[in-house]
Length: 392
Image (cartoon, rainbow, N blue to C red):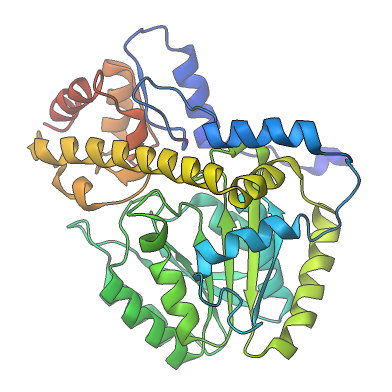
């Protein structure tokens, strides 16, 4: 019976990794994989996480199950960073649970949307490919609108039109910061308007906060989420620690749900637990325990925030260098300087992408998405020169 299954196409990013690994050139450049890299090209373990893991190894006295909610001390320790220190639960209207990474959180968020009877979700494109895949797998109708203008800014006109077209009760999926794949974020003034529009149309925001701290700062990157939650009665927030704690392979995330009143929250939480139980039963503990230990220790928290500042500053320097190159060949790198996070899209044709791989050993996604953290002092000028040749 299994022969009824059709061959599925290989994941494009995984295929790209293989192509890069098989390239024998010493000066090859990997701009495809979505992980942070130092100026030496490494993806290190945070020092704060290392210290927490050492403490965890010495003090953890059990590997017993925690339940579908996971490590609730971890979930609660994150909340002031996401929702603000004054009232992170919004008067008892917000509760969360641990998930296997940001993908697990998004999967659970959209499954909860579906179980609540919502049939349609809206999303700006281009977007992270798994957003659409998850919606399709769940049987949610997905409507799209343009996220960015050709000038490299957020397309607010397209967003306004989409919100106006959406039906009351539709889900609306938005990136909280550091948009993947464009790096183009909404301004604070944009978020002020978006919050009001979502509330007026009675839409359910699903906010994907996967890169907090990698854009403008932990507080600054939370502005959009907090602004929307202040305006609407209900919302879902999917959170990832994979990037801002460097826990990629440990799959550490959280899902937060907000209801109009505290009394409405328990049924929502119970459904989320039931969905989690049917999907992964309970999330992996190690990464969440390490994050919890970092956030419970003032010295480790300060060390983590310093390390995060270093990451963000390095990416800002790379973006500034690309923007300073301005117009190269047939392209313009100037907008990259005003974008945030790991990613930006360079407007390459598929043929130009292939030529960059073949002629220069530079690997990035077919969409033109580059991971700016893959650029270093040693390879950024050759990259700019290759862009000039490849788009000329």
